[in-house]
Length: 67
Image (cartoon, rainbow, N blue to C red):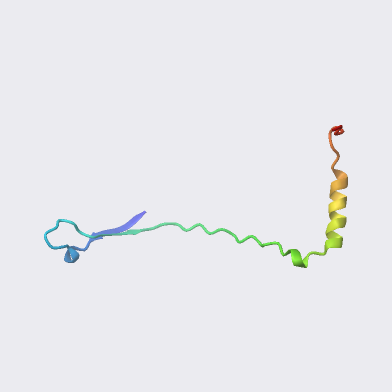
């Protein structure tokens, strides 16, 4: 991942043994896909309610809830 490494001896501080180190890294960048954000203002609510009723009609509880 390190493609280059060097020091800047001309930027050495006065009376110090510290040197700036320049390091170049080759890092891969992973981009993620942008998910669309639902716009609830543009929903056809009548069609949504029909679709919801149809899908909820297919779901049946495994046992009856008594309380």
